Length: 169
Picture 1 (tube, rainbow, N blue to C red):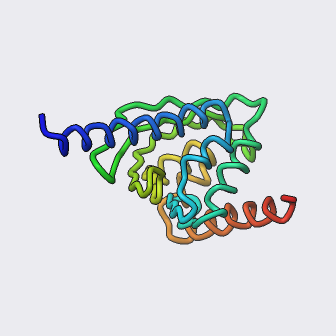
Picture 2 (cartoon, rainbow, N blue to C red):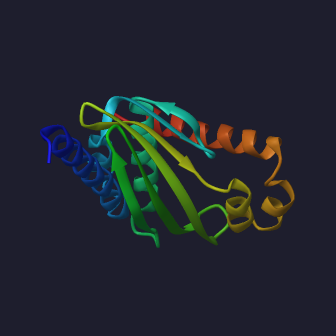
Picture 3 (cartoon, rainbow, N blue to C red):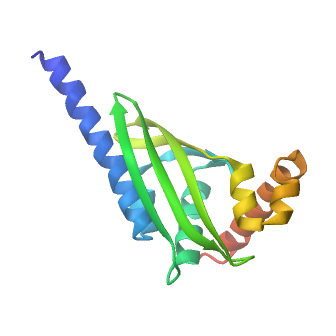
């Protein structure tokens, strides 16, 4: 086996371990370990928050973890794969949506890019309509596919994040 191939295999295993560390910490609601997996120049994106960069992406995980402590939140992760500077994983979140008291089971596909041994880009994909029906019931069934709903959700989640950040020391 060539040294270049061994180096590539080693890098891929390290990045798979980094992704696993991230999700294990998420299941334990350990936001600081999650954030330590991120590069300072992280770019995170998902259907609920849109694009978050740098410290704001880390603060989103801090806010989410803090809000779920002592509740029925759990995640299951699988299919962690890394090849050089990219990777992916599947994860599922199980929780009760606090605004409605409805149970949610969200299935997410995550894509990663790595730089300097950290996650520099993290994109989560999930079916926002399916999520909205679970979390919001009839309201999500009726409005969940609309651009109005997507924009309103992003506005609300980013407003909550801004409010959370104002309370940080």
